[in-house]
Image (tube, rainbow, N blue to C red; front, side, top):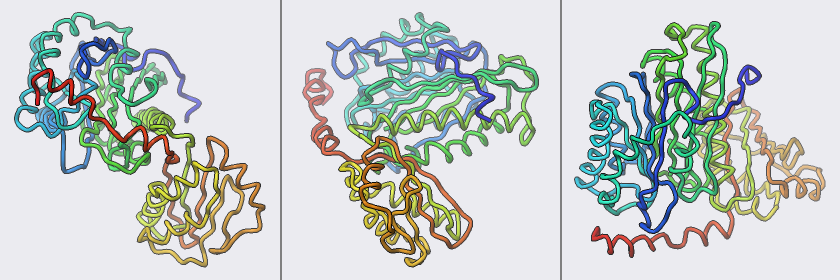
Length: 417
């Protein structure tokens, strides 16, 4: 199916009818000039869908965007980096509403047609004095050629912006889909701090879009982990405006299958990009579990291995330590039998039947020294399988995350604390 997708430029601005913009507000540092406030807008009404963090502590923008989706469809997304607007109480809700209402007023929309997302430091009020009066300028800059600016404006600890766009055919019509994502740390399944925005000019109902979104998120963003920490702000939002000119896609139709495959392709590409850009990571590791009794057993094993600090530390050191892998398999709470477990590293046997395999250790070390490899775990008890994408854990990750609170000094200057 991938062969039917053509990569194009433009990111979230690639599909017809979408306008994008980004400006610098100095949200985290008033002296900084990097882009930190972004807007995505469809010039016609959209079908929309979203998924959000399952953390019981949810940021104000998450709560408000969820409420707006329950009322109907979104047509705009305003997003900022530098401040998460999380754990900010009623003030945070007020500020998120102000961001939505500012956009709605400038574009003559209902406030509920605007989604809002934030990412950055948790626990500090938004510096609205540097945001609210800049929204008209942001709207004025809307353009069909600024998708890359949106991708750049939402990053925090990312080393680079991450975006993708494709075109493909459905029933004789050319359809475009574009997406961008931010995320490098605080990444764990059940919504991997991560924001993702996807636009498409496909024509489909909100119900069909929501179903495809839930399924594709499960197969992409819920399959990645960097450090096992789940954010307060994780959000995926998708807008579909139908401007490709095609007839509406019906659920379970052949057209729906093509759209779903395209959406999965875009989401998985973005999800993998998050892991590859993880905070100070040096390895991209695919963990494949096969032969489990049930899907849930396979998932438990994959998550246990992918999140294990010991396993990830050994990968960082180029150590093919299959003993750490099988010990994670054992505590995963999946139904396994030790004497049936086989472990392969890039198809080289490291463990067979729960025992050391005859493969020379130097061969395994050479594989784990590479920046990209696969761990295959065969439980040999059934037909179920599950795949996750993860990284190593480096000393530099710990050093990078030792302190985040230099921002509090600026917050005191702003009178926010």
